Length: 125
View 1: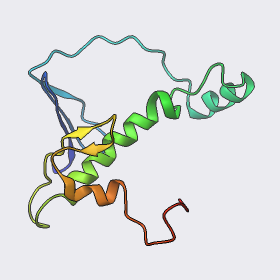
View 2 (view 1 turned 90 degrees about the vertical axis):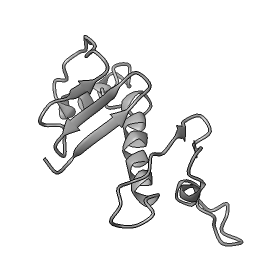
View 3 (view 1 turned 135 degrees about the vertical axis):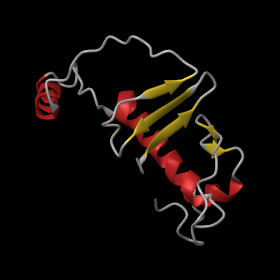
């Protein structure tokens, strides 16, 4: 297997082989939690339901409740690649402060997180 996702946490490690974790999830040092969740009827059905109920029943992939955190996790992987000293070396471990949006051990990646704009263009974006 040449691709996958490795997440190292305080209580254990999780490895998901494949581009989309299609080969399952392997946990090391932690037990797989039992999680009850509502099965999605599908993206389109959720989208229509959210519109019809004025978002009283939001889609499961809504930004504040799901996709925002997922996006942040994926982008941290990109920062690890950017922080690698050379193209041939693996990425660097990034220690991330999610509240302050700061890489606490890798100041070199902050130009990607919060780029510096040329004088006169600071407030445009």
